[in-house]
Image (cartoon, rainbow, N blue to C red; front, side, top):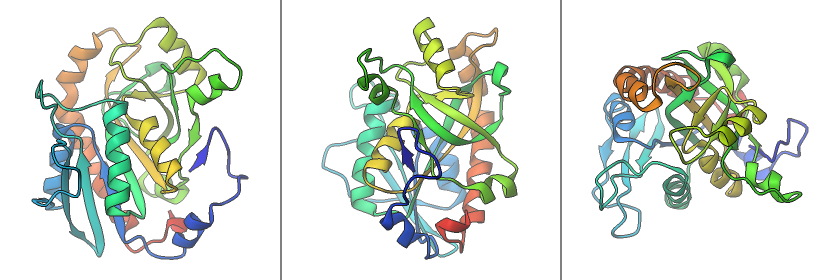
Length: 265
């Protein structure tokens, strides 16, 4: 992916260029919540790895299997050891992405999950977006150049054929560590031109970019941020149904990827 707002004219990384000539053989799916992960695990009949590739004591969970000659790995950050809730947010996402890339060496990362959407930007409950750009909205550093670093705008790995074949919506994603949205967050999200917001995507993108692994982002809308219902209430109300839509989209994406090179996406 191109970093800090670089577009299609940026030099192609030689490592990515080399992989583009070979069929994709290994995919890493990173999902933040167990509710989002298990339908995908069941869909592809993945099994939990009893010999975790991760450091002893971390709650991260690794599922693996094979589908259409593709080695499938799915990792979710597990439950917080103290509070027992899903380890959501950018810190867990960054750590899991880094450790998973080093341990599993994927050809491609898919970050799949739910997100809040903005009706003013055309998002509706259950819509599934293939993300074109990611950025942060809560890393405010009002110093020249550091301000750009804080936003961390990145173009995701381009997949025009996938977008067209599956007829998914395209949009930009803004990431922050809070479920709610402050007025400052709202201002930053608008500046990011985002259609959806989540709590992990830009962090996954940062690590994937750092380690030169192509990554795509699939987000399904559970709640309307600029709507009338409280965000937390609407999120919980729609989580199960929207997760099913997300699961279906991920399955279609994997089917499309089968047998193709990165350059054919």
